[in-house]
Amino acid sequence: MGVALTELLLIKEIDLDFLHNKVLVVDAPMWLYQFLSSIRQRDGTLLTDSKGQVTSHLMGLFTRVSNLMQQDIKLAFVFDGEPPKLKHLTLEKRKELKIEAEKKFEKAKEKEDLELMKKYAARTSRLTDEMINEAKNLVMAFGLPVINALSEAEAQASLIVKNNDAYALATNDADALLFESPKIVRNLNMAGKKKRKDKLSYEIINPDIIDLKENLHHLGIKQEQLIALAMLIGTDYNAGGIKGIGPKTALKLVKEHGTNFDALFNNAKWNDFFDFSWQEVFELIRNMPVDENYELKWSDANEEEIMKLLVGKHDFSEERVKSQIDSLVKEKNKKSQKGLGEFFGQ
Image (tube, rainbow, N blue to C red; front, side):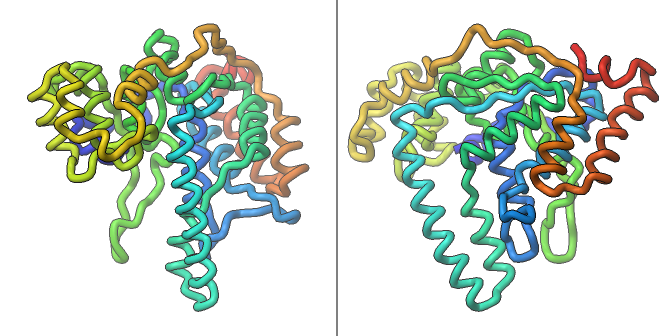
């Protein structure tokens, strides 16, 4: 849904310097899934250690977090809690798509077609409980806050930004705007990397920022109407939306009906597509469970824990991990001479 909504929005490209000394709260599951999709071997298979355990998520997290910290960007990570019941249908559909992709991957493997293997392998990403726990342990070893959401990570992270405890939510999904995140920063987990535009050229991925208030004004609608618009296109809680209604048509319909959502969804024939009411989805998004008593606390990095997880358990290069940690110290000392403890502190 994020991609469909994005085409209607005002988006400003920024650079990492713009984010210096700012707190960003990260949609952790989204980052991890993207690492699993993008950090792979030539044939599309995931990176693994000598025991066959997946390490793509840790490789991405370690590299990206340490690099961003060297840019004086202060991170906090929010992880999903219990998914809403309405999301289970979407999760089941995603599971089916992954199973289908796995079958296509195996066929491509038989033909030794590397391009197709890579294409389908990227669609099979699964985030296990063990991967999530390891990610949390690595984040905490860096001295960064880990917040466990009651339900959706995006909703919890949006609350933190709304409370002015963070500048923006770092996610690639514009869906976060539905939870009233004042600002979202996209592509932070991929910033600076080269993306193939075609077979002959590459383009550098830059972060960008989307401002909720600015976009509501630009679209000429209110927050409640933005939710209704998204529901017409399709959200995680009503996958696929209303057939035949794209973003521009959805915006037009929402403006025509104002806040008369009964008329809006009746005219859009909601009941022909879903066996649950539009009110259920709307109220879920408006009142997603969040924890008001979260805590953001930064502390010293624990080099020993980082080394134990990455080098001891997963065969990462000791030299590379040590070098990255040393770079953090060197970069901060160059600027302040206050040492690693101050760098990771609040």
